Length: 130
Image (spheres, rainbow, N blue to C red):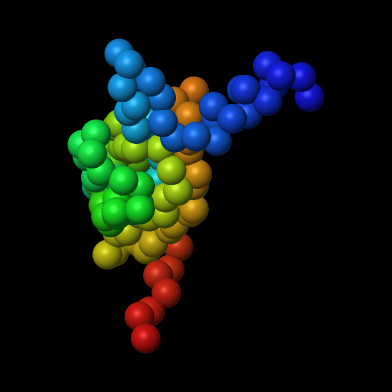
């Protein structure tokens, strides 16, 4: 591919952007609908679990920077819809759980703000813990 295509591919692969001369972590929105047997389910807890880079000063080296586990949570509305706003770009596990109706999860990768994710989840029986 041409250089413009290579630059576009690189921008999608790097979860940083320059804002006012500073590197900032790209933020994305994750949205979707939770259903059970095709019927939207209200009141389901939806969680995106991921690892986040801490804020760093100019004097920190990459070798000393550690990621930390984080979660962002939303509750589905009356139409079973959820929205997780401004989550740092990267790799996620998005899960939905209802004690009465079941569980669902999916792995997601988002690295560009142009790639906000629409992810619908269908509840089914939860796997039992060992």
